[in-house]
Image (tube, rainbow, N blue to C red; front, side, top):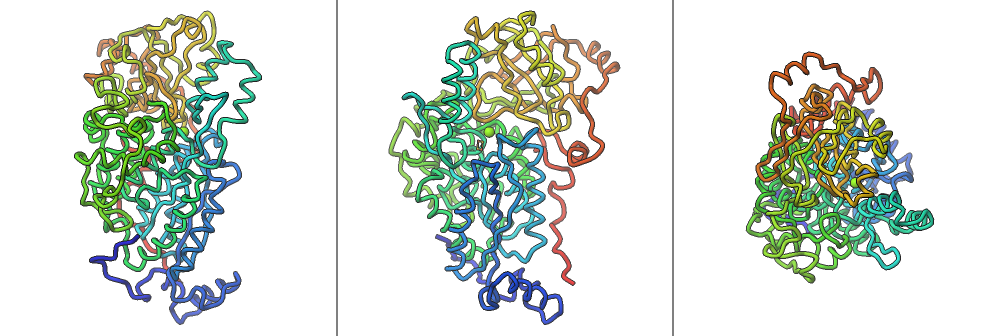
Amino acid sequence: MFNTQNLKKLDISELRSQRWYAPDTIRAFAHRQRTQQAGLNREEFMGKPVIGIINTWSELSPCHSHLRERAEAVKRAVWAAGGYPVELPALSVGEVLVKPTTMLYRNFLAMETEELLRQHPIDGAVLLGGCDKSTPAMLMGAVSMDIPMLFCPAGPMSSGKWRGQTVGAGTHTKKYWDQLRLGAITQHDWIELEGSMTRSIGTCNTMGTASTMTSIADAIGFMLPGASSIPAADSRHVQMAAKCGETIVDMVWHDHKPSKWLKRENFINGIVAYMAVGGSTNAAIHMIAMANRAKIKITLDDMEAIARKVPVLANLFPSGDQLMEEFFFAGGLMAQMKKLEQFLHKDVVGVTNTTLGSWIENAHCYDDNVIRDLDNPVVPLSQGCALSVLKGNLCPNGAVMKSSAAKPELRKHKGKAVVFDDHQSLSDNIDSPELDITKDSVLILRNAGPVGAPGMPEWGNLPIPKKLLQQGVNDMVRITDARMSGTHYGTCILHVAPESAVGGPLALVKTGDIIELDIEAGSLNMLVSDEELADRREHLKPTHRTFDRSYAALYQQHVTQADEGCDFDFLQAGSDVPEPPIH
Ligand code: FES
Ligand code: MG
């Protein structure tokens, strides 16, 4: 599994954990004594690499409910490989139950991962996560810490059916919610769906943020090649977890840490995979933040340039009509990557110290409908791609959208703005019969960005007003500084930067202003004169809530904007993480 070629094997004295365990001092005595207090014999841990298993298991994180068992599989392989495994629980950012939004806590988990690894005698880490933000969070922290590490993804849940229909997590919740509002399904149906849509352990089975981020991390090289596609409930998933345990021990002995293998080209490969799987817009933020931790600059423009060349090939909801299990059976991510060879850097290596070229060498596609060829994409490039970047006087630093999941006739659009200052007023008024809105209006929600909300919730799939739904309208142009769930679809323009709460021009727009969108040209503007905008700015009063204590206050004070990755300014690339003094 791990390629030791050209790598020097460390001596035991060179392992980081030896600073804790080896010296003949009263402190080291205490470290050895207290480890034995846990019931271990001296020879069970002395002279062995210590492997930290960072586990985001929680009873309130259903996507991760199997991660305790997976940690056991990792441990059994670490022991067998001559290591000493230790499991460290970390914050679980389960997407659905955490409020106000898991994005608020991505940086918290990133900090926790970094500090857990820093403060303990750990030589290498296996990161157990997968639900949306947990992947970028743990990788950001572990990359900053820069010790050998690899990611063991939770794996997607099994495919779902309801009354013979394929149903995907997130995507169909939204679809059936609209049907319920219209009276097309009954309350009884709705309750039945509630109990049957997400039928197994694992992350969302659509190409939402979870599978987007694990696919990207896989393509970058943070995993055992192809691991991201293995369904959570499959026995091969347990086997993969065990292989992670075996591999990390080898990685530690050969000091195979991110700074030795992680390059800009790895991230480019990640972006290619992102576009081909039709990934979530959320990834645009996480890619920038993860690369930054590796002291590598990736911009929205880098992503957009690749998006314009790489069409959506994975036929998965919300862009297509299949689920992750079918993707796995069709050959998984490596089969997908094989079809993208011309765009990839094949000579870079990942955690296994093997080249991307070797990962895809024996990959094979078993279903060309699920994993499409370049000449038969799910959505032709002329009709949209996974990530379109827009700029203009409404979003000088950029806004993004998944144009492949938008209505083709809205690619070029002009309409009157209908503006909501916050999410509450939107929810309270969107279904009002008095709301002055047509299918050509442009729905706007502000104060929902990183600082404004705070935490940039997934409110961006703004609901279509009921009276338009009743007219058969199922998509319209929507604009916000919030994010959108990767499982959702529609002409939703997101991540407007700078956001309204920090004085971005989104704060200046008024109901009735004309908004002009041109996806092909990459532009988004409000047709309001500069003089008028300057006048509005003079009278602008911030309307978002400011926190003066708690984590929310820290977040508001230090979070960067969406185009910069929404990391904390003090955690972005800077000096290396200092080793703690041991006295
Ligand atoms: Fe956990 Fe979708 S809610 S992956
Ligand atoms: Mg999600």
